[in-house]
Length: 352
Ligand code: SF4
Image (cartoon, rainbow, N blue to C red; front, side, top):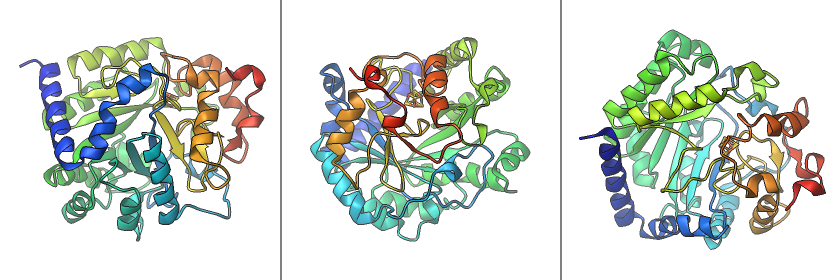
């Protein structure tokens, strides 16, 4: 059986399970393609509920976010998820920081209404024991995204500033799978490591073990602010497409999903909600489109979709690949407390 047919079958089985377990979320997911054609945004919202973490990764950007008085509570999440449901949204990702160190994690998951939404979690996997994986599944989580920087344990541990982090992350993959969670390996691809055996090795490992690989391309933000030599080029992008043909489990968010060629999904298919209520076009674009403590989510989403860079189709990742957007917009928040307000970056010409 070809690998792409095998992948389609795994995907079909996952959808069947979602249909059975979460019919309300499933119905909304079925509408995504039609909504996209009609120009309606259906973003997956990544929620950085709390920036606290047990590791100190070299590439982390959370330290650059300015502290604000009011932070998200589970009650705020409940209200936000009600509004997101009214708007037809269907997927959340709980990120951070590291969600597995949260004492109130079960309340956070409950506030996001697991019966109405497909729920994922981004984690470094350090605390993802078998027992924790079973708890997450029973609380309504569908998927975990575990970060692996390299298959060389020493390199991963050095990057994460923690001896043993690699072994814990690797164990976490199988603990989650055993508990019935979908498992994604999240990895960062730079210009330096893209066209190396590492990319192939990761894709092959995922394919053989029933995982997928979500590629996060390098961004010149956070600890890498201004380091444009790490950004991928056109040859790197073509190489990843080539690997995807051989190993469909390796995926970039600019690749088609649900049969739709969406290109960069900022606002349209992705949003990030910060610990302090700001909505960003994506986790790497540190420009606030508005704050949910000050205005409705619907108004913020409407503003995002009225900015032409997010409304119009772009085949390249705006924040990590599109040199025009990086030079003219990303660089405007370099060196500033984050996120910056949209009015500091966009002028009337940027709106449709
Ligand atoms: S800017 Fe890049 S990372 Fe952000 S949504 Fe677009 S493709 Fe994804």
